[in-house]
Image 1 (tube, helix red, strand yellow):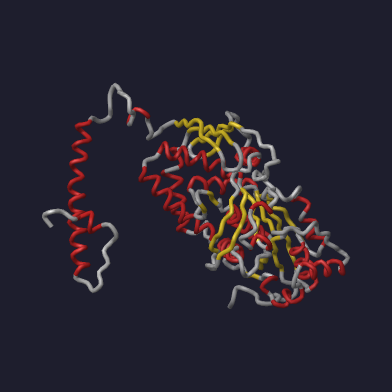
Image 2 (image 1 turned 90 degrees about the horizontal axis):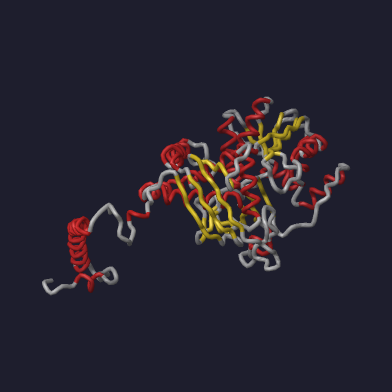
Length: 449
């Protein structure tokens, strides 16, 4: 039997829906209730910067026909998972050094699991949300939902042709709510759509689908438009301290919770427009999309964490962190943050990399991602200035004689490689129309060949 309802479940079915309070979900709740379903609305408090008070959202679901509605506090969970992502470098998307910090995938992992756990408590086992068939979220909500409740069934209004036919767009939805006496007053129509949580904001669709529209059409909601010359941004120095891989202090100050510290990081980074990026990416269906992202707090903590990593750990550890982190980032993007492979990678990086990261970094922040590292301190560092100092040191770690011996040992591999390359070129010469690697024949020519 299929897990996904292709049309409405039977009348009286209890159905849980992720309720944001926007036009789409208001229309869905009203329509589903009108069809005789017992709709339960679940709203996640993600400290989303585009909502003044999330506690005002559940009553809206009740007003539109839901039989029950709950607000789920996910704020601490959001920050906790964001810190895990930083500890593991779980970011696979980037352009010329600017990262996308996977803030929406992290939000879906927290939101979907919290909602379905609450649904299980309420004995609700049919789940719906506002994701469409063209995006990533439809897969993320599906995977996390079934992971929590193996008996879960899915009904998504935007996969039901009857619903799509009835409500082809925002105008039809608005007219439907007006007919019910519950008009939805839309604000000025934006040139793009926005999804946000405490970790970051995603702007995409509409005008942003065209690559000739840049970041300049976006009005940031977590910071300043640093590209506007009329926006005054003062230079600022900030020191962020980590303890065993976890951010602990800002300018020496401790906070009542990790959530409070992260909110302050958002404020600091936001004042400078830190962490904004323009990315082209592959969705899970392997078609490309484009988004403009904000993540001031994540960007600030990421800079500090990776600076400390580079001072504390050796190159092989850093290479493993980079390779595994990129793989983990893709798993997160695909809705697999809690799969065994992802848990294995997280466990390794959190157990063997993060605990050594105790120290602080002082930055001078200017505009956007323009910053300077002023000071780096750590409890333990592989870096030590005396190891490679160009000045005379009292007890050098190695002498010129030691280095001569180390260079002589390189003869083995260099000459073996040379013999291998010559053998390869001779083999190519016996092939029809051989093509040698550029530069190699001349490089290896000698008088005895």
